[in-house]
Image (tube, rainbow, N blue to C red; front, side, top):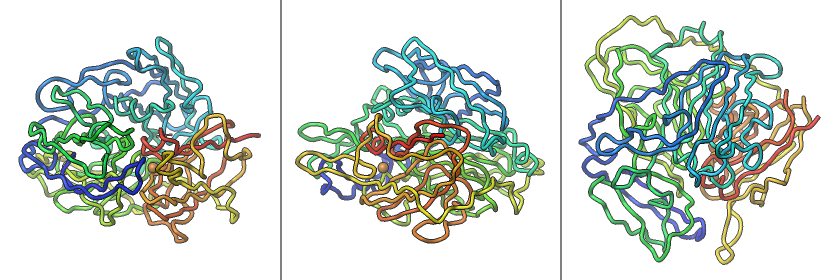
Length: 510
Ligand code: C2O
Ligand code: CU
């Protein structure tokens, strides 16, 4: 585990919980001697109207020394290539499954995008079987018009296996380019860097650790044995391994590498931050105390930039930010994750260093962050709430517990809510469990109408698809159901929770 305080929580024994403090050892994440040895890997950009991604096993350099790590990748790298496409231009992505037999069938989801149901990455249908391929079609339109500039990501969504398949590396980024955005003068080209933040554990031979490894506490006390080798490395011990419900790694990675560095100039940079972890959340900050200027979510720009010292990102969430390195030539700045102000038990909030910027030399910079950003239009929210989705823990200790929505575990054959095409609906999302969840709605980009009865904070005034819901919180969101019909999902993006029942279906019909 990375250094920090962890709340722990056991799904099968909900009353077993507590706090665990892990300190960084030599070379461990957060250790003083962190050297940021590896250069940041920037995945290759693909701009083709028809992209082909071969899912296969790949060896890649994730740790600074020793063997390379085997991953399952889209197109030979983790993250897979960054797909960049103009808004409104149809994009086909053909995905072929060349993974080993135990991988089974796959299903790819483009998170944040609005597309036909059969291309949504359904967990049990329209699968990509081994040796076969499937073509997904993304029109990049919304209500017949070009979609807003966005920062989406693609990842596997297979029933019960989403955690494993993402952990193994089936993840990549997708940027929708909007000409209005290009005209705004934001940093571009090599000063527009997508950053996928994630965590993994590794074996002594640098291979991805088994998922049940250091994740959950059994027997109420997490006994741990330090491995020495990786500093803060640890393993749970107990009479038998409980089912895994918190896939947390002991190393923090950016674009698939542990603690990399990036050489920059003393200019502004646009960073597209994505948390692709299964379970962990990151409270991002810069080591020199300078703030981020948040300009967007993953679903388009905010109406106005928001200056923030910390940005908390849970699984599946994105933040589009500008950082300013002016006056810092010759200095290093570290992107790190710091403790959350509000501590919630059982939520994988991480502490440690993520990425070092080596600011070297000045350069011309004509970028700017305009006061008013070209933001997507917001729908008028109806007064009536047509659906409430309640996220909870169900069952009991004897018969076992499961994560649920409206009291039920996911069932691919059940439709939980029906919506008519071309209507606007307001939904309530509420958390009645006692840990935080990050709730994702497929298919639409939503306006956040209220958070706990109040106007949402400034960074939630654009469009969103994944929200933090602390225990007891509730939000109201609204969207217009346009263009496509069929079933789509609602789920917690903590992938362990998703795989363990916290998912439901809404269906759009004519
Ligand atoms: Cu990012 Cu249903 O997923
Ligand atoms: Cu959850």
